[in-house]
Image (cartoon, rainbow, N blue to C red; front, side, top):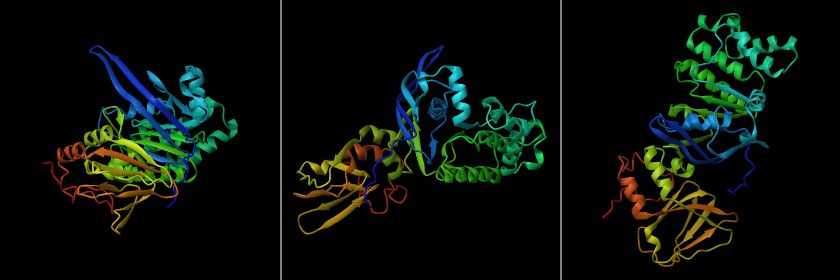
Length: 357
């Protein structure tokens, strides 16, 4: 399959650092985050408690501000806006679903859903209530519109919070652990709504600790100790612990083979392992054996090979190069040395059962 050109992202986070000052001293929660989110994507963000995932999405919503780095949404750089400008921009462009609902207890469900429309002065006043009622109907709460939040169950409150997030028809939906307090059936209903929104062209970013829910997104970012794991690595080794994935990300060296290039491999190359992160390539051992590789596959030269040749396809090929000794040390230091439990892609040829000598 030919490599498609990368489009301009809707959201771009560049070298985001976030430092919190505490009584015990400074704590760096985000450590140089670079991440892009495209229009119409459904992206899940996963990580252990305290890894920085909620802080990361707070950078996108403008609820928090980076110590350094920039967050750009469309043509707007969030760091340049004051609090008043940010509040107006947020109300028109973002729908935010919080884990603990954040509904105003003295307002009915329909009044809570109308609130964003009132705040941003969107839609005619005569239309707002009908729109709010329609949104509540969409999330299964049409017959509870006049109830106060305290008179409803937790799942119903979260469903109302989803309706409120959709009130201004925002292009971006941010959900921070939206199903953390819900039963399985209600959580599935919420996820179906999210998937429908993505199908309509909305961009969905969801923080979750639930791996099954995360897999329903089209793309998953793993954050560990304030850093993002390389996506190609996390896809190739979904069963490895996050800390090990981050170690592999630190070890990886990105290289690119341009179309038509035929790098000759020297005798030193058996010490390297390669993961194809993007594109396709061909390997020819000059003895008549030809193998084809594509994204997500590993190539391990753990054998005498002579003058083998790589050939890129008609599009660039992006690779991650690892020192083989370091690569195996990380793999073998985890509990995932059993090849039945370690995923390397259907056609990967890496002999994961090897041990360091």
